[in-house]
Amino acid sequence: MTQKQLTILFTGMVPVPGTLALARERLPGVRIVSIVDDSLLDDVIGAGRLTQDVTRRVCQYALAAEDGGADLILSQCSSVGEAIDVARGLVRTPILKIDEPMAEEAVRRGPRIVVAATLPTTLAPTCRLIARCAAEAGRAIEITQVLAEGAFDVLKAGDQARHNAMVLDALRPHRDAADVIVLAQGSMAVLQPELEGWGVPALTSPRMGMERVAERLGAL
Image (cartoon, rainbow, N blue to C red; front, top):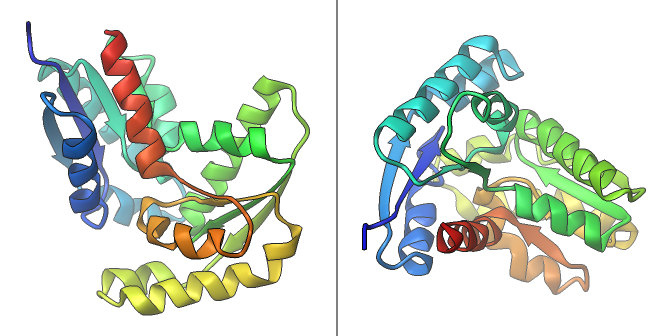
């Protein structure tokens, strides 16, 4: 039997170790190939939005993943999710966004959805993805956006504890107005247990996304 291959597209270095560890845990026997370009997220942050140039490069990486034998492509970055929508029209290989299962679950658990991020370039597309999932499901939702400004830079500098505290401080005023909290970036997943101690379900993308990858590969 031919070994299946998952190719993961990364736009930064921060999520690489955790995502690869999760892939090895959940996908035994699957060949894992990484494509990492840490200039992509930097360019999105610098422009304050997804640019045409970044979209083109993401599409080129998706084409390269297909040419490299991928059975499934996983986009790890929420900030370039709308570039993946373009790439899906260019490749035959299925592409999964790691945050799609999380968005679908948030809609099921709503209607009051609090979305937290440490980057505005992640917050906005995540909210649009959730809104699109709600429209497809025919469900009315209310989204509250929470930006822990500066926390991503703190994390990149290596201070996980301060990052965590900044995110929790930003979320605390909204804890009683949420049916579900969405942590828009995989780097925030470490906060899930503490948030659930508040009595509010907290959703993160890495494990839910990898579970969907396992299902999709198993169906191939």
